[in-house]
Image (tube, rainbow over the protein chains, first blue to last red):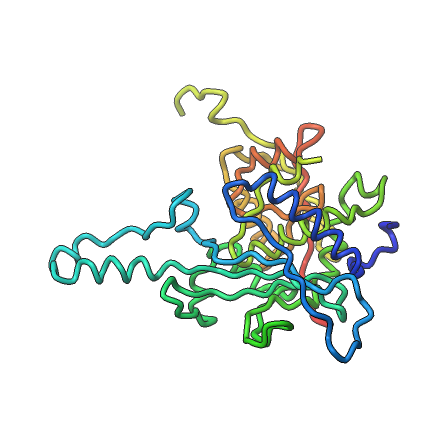
Length: 227
Length: 94
């Protein structure tokens, strides 16, 4: 793909390719993290879709993204307990502990191809361990303060809520209208790209390095060093 | 300051590079302790350009998390003794 004329988008077929490459790379580097999986979807019954090769999306579910996860590496555990309040109300210790634990948000992340924008789109939702979903204000509070604010204020990235294309439930989504612009910028400065053209296999990795910051998903630098 | 040990004060040369429609800085090269987070570079850029947000990225088509250490970014993306950090301004919605 000639970098000078590339518009930052990719075809549905390329998305499928990029998704496979991304899943493999993720599995090999992030062994302590659950893997992404590909969720195939049935074709629309009215057969309008011409993209017969990308009926599906990437999914990573039930993960902890926030500072809670960074401090605890394997077991999911509660954030710092407030000892003073617990000791005063001994009969409520269990409940207080439980409510602290239930305030750890879990995330479901889906990467879904948008045929109209020709780019991937991040859909996500968050919920506490008791199943209670987080509304937008709660999610905003939970996001990593520095990067999320910057990205949310940016005109290139903003969050909307709309129906998940396949699951018929409201999810949050990072609007795709700026994606092709910043993907173009990202690849324009890649020296190897200038020589060899855009490597589709790296598309999702680059894309997620930006989009992941909004939800607090940090891409380890080792991911880029894999062949 | 007391005598410094080389490992703790190793500084990284950062070269800030405007891309897209971003303004070019008069002073685009500086040194920053490797132990600082990338967030410091981003904050510096935003202050210099009087903007609240910028799109910031390095070579290899990657936008580093602000919590990354500058020294780690240099080790992964640096060349010719410096870390090139590209920046662009977010364009308005069409």
